[in-house]
Length: 347
Image (cartoon, rainbow, N blue to C red; front, side, top):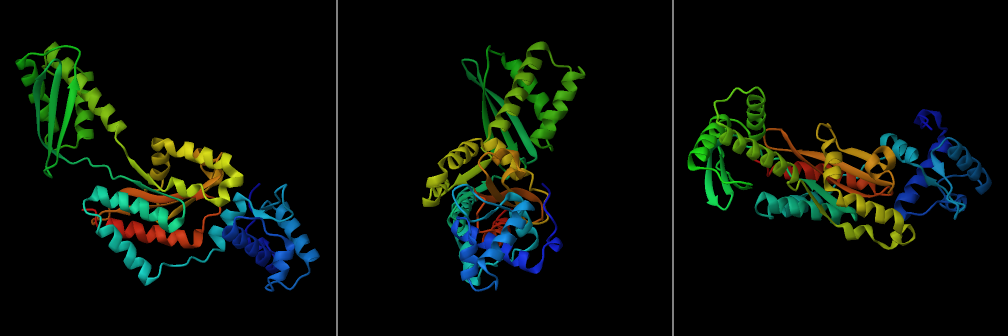
């Protein structure tokens, strides 16, 4: 059912709907008409409030769990609240200073990413996630070294001074001239390109037979690019911290959902793909429940924001994941500010 626009709700329906959503996000429990009436902000009888709640349920914004007479927001209701009603609580000056200091004290960028993921978990009470920026520098040098016993060491040196060593485990031995020819060929295609650009060019040349390589050298090149491509796909791309926070007291009655969420988080490639979909967002993105297929069964929400380097290029995405009753008003600006703080450290 499509959610009605906010303008379709009367003032009292809007006020009651907001009380239900805010009460649910605070307590994690359905909100009943008596609780709304006793709050003093709505001057209606419990019977009148129940009538409004029933109308909101008919419109698909609220639902009544079987175990309670109260109401809780549906995913459509949460989306309407987040998009049209939520008033974000910007981080205080003290919180902003603490975030920036904790990230900057972490040391190398890898430690900063670890610290960021842990900090997001602490701030949200859920799990924090940071997608590691892809490092694909332009290459300056390449060489192949025979290690014996069917193993060859490939050494790649980037223009930024980074060095990567990869061992090729080969099914056969190659002569020194084979290694020399293959190494010279690959080096000539790598220099000045990123690894992904070079692999694409080499594949095209091999497919079109536009090389002068002999059979042994060609075989060595093909085995090498297959290994490098596979290696790139297997690199860890996601840091997740704070999964234990998902097992709080409120999760006791919903253990199956939490178990499903923890299983989903084990599939880091799929989670990284979800975060990657937020790379081009101009602002923090919010995925609620089944809006994303990965977390449809666990009914979880993801709040994600891209972070950029000093030149404004998106290099990664960070965020939090937890139950749909996350404190969106507080976490959204926290995630946004953390992304901007982390971006200042990225060269």
